[in-house]
Image 1 (cartoon, rainbow, N blue to C red):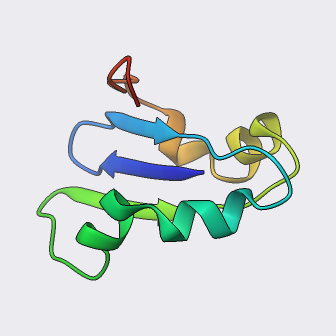
Image 2: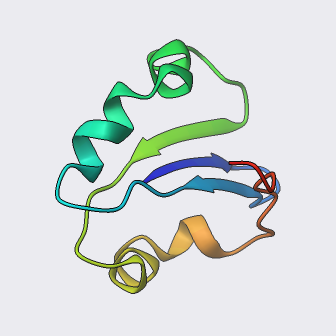
Length: 74
């Protein structure tokens, strides 16, 4: 899963990569690779692997405090 998280507003953009190769697919995504290592202002970029979305919501709860502004096509 790739999460773009706005530290100021709490807004987030989430893109899931299901399956056994999900983490590898996430770090290979062209959008992630384009932004990796860049200063994105108030936006933070995170790649998180887990067995379930619910587990990530629990272990990384701060990323889920604001609004989900994920575009429909993401």
